[in-house]
Amino acid sequence: MIILSYLAVGAIAFALITLSKFHRAMNAFFILHTLASLAIGIYVLLNTPFPIFETGSEYFYVDHLSLYEVLIAALLFFLASVYANGYVESLMQAQELHRNNLKIFYMVFSLLLTTVTLAFFSDNLALFWIFAELTTVFSAALVAILSAKENIDAAIKYIFIASGAMLFSFIGLIFLYTLSGEVLGSGTLNWTILAKNAALLSPKMLTASFVFLFIGFAAKSGIFPFHTWLPDAHSKAPSAVSAILSGVLLNIGMYGILRMYAIVRQTQAETMISQFLLGFGLLTIAVAVLNMLLQKNLKMLIAFSSVEHMGILLLGIGIGTPLALFWTLFYILAHSLTKASLFFSAGILHRQYESNLIKDIKDVFSLQPIAGWGFVIGSFAIIGMPPFPIFSAKFFILLEAFGFSKPLVFAVLLLLVIASAAFARFLIEAFTQSSKDAGTEGTETPLIPYTVRGGMKFPILSILFMILALGVVFPEPLENLLNIIVYELGYL
Image (cartoon, rainbow, N blue to C red):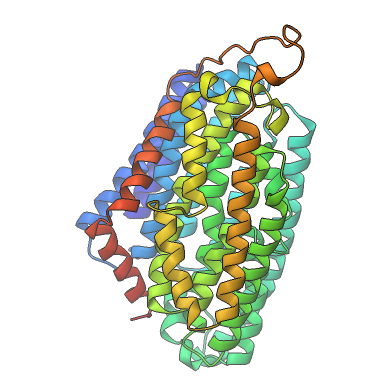
């Protein structure tokens, strides 16, 4: 019934958007879709015993981890839908989004929410693979929807790399199905069955299967060396879409890696796979940070920051202790919220200056104080400054890593300092510029403040409030939820 509820809500919203003729109606129906998805998730969390196998289906399964991811997704889609009300209007006014594509934009956005939800609720790994591929197609369509050649190029690059890598995951599926068939008598790709029988699986074959699956999931999450699509897609997409790409879509690949590692850690392959994940995590952080250091483009800086944080999440998974997993799960929430606030702020700044380049950003705090301070505070939060929630998550993940490898911790700390310097350099260079410093007085056309349309400030202010609150107080219900997830994955 849970899956049917989500499908029904998605189908109704899609139909209403299709029948709508005006932007306000399309946006309102999409907002209602996101709110309904959020409401269903909260109701299930508070009123339903777990785990839940969907009646009459062996392919869908609801546990606390999948519901946690769905709730994060629904919340960010809601904030993006509110932001889109004014943001999309400004895109059409600037002729960056053709009015004929407006309905397609909301239809695909609605389909993306439904597909993301089904991906997280898939018990069958093959079904998860299909839905993950569909999210790539739908999100690439949202990247390409703007009237610019570079957007189409970025979308094609996204599909080519992410979907190409997912073909390797398909080989991993074949290995895993064959392996489970040898042990259980009949092959299966269901997470739940594989987790219960993990100890019976051949470590060598399981390792091979994991590596192939990792290639596809890593590409989906922007892990080095499969990350090259991410900066272009995230920076070229409309900012409402960029927030979803970074805050939700990257989580799908990490979800797949986490589910597979929960199976692997019950076998003798755990040590090798743990070192494998730690190595790729460190490389991902290093590559991202070095690209951030001299970045001149605002959204490219945020995009490479997403690559960096995916590397940290990979470290948390690879460490494999209950405490590391707990804080990795918390990190997912903190990163999703913070990164969305940065992209929302960047969207307003792009509308103001019609550019994402440092040289064009001037008089930020007098022209766009909400977006300016939103980006500054979001930057402090994303680099892990206290009291923001990423600070505590990073601290405890690195504390757990200290028991594994002291050189690893020192290397990560050095890279995090460089990442902080990259944000500091950008903020100082861009946000201290004044139009009065541009040249001879009178030669520079005075900048007129862009009128921020309704709904664009609310998501930024809401997220800043949430991350400040999460940094100061750790809600007991959230703590209990994360502990339950750690237990259900077999870490306790």
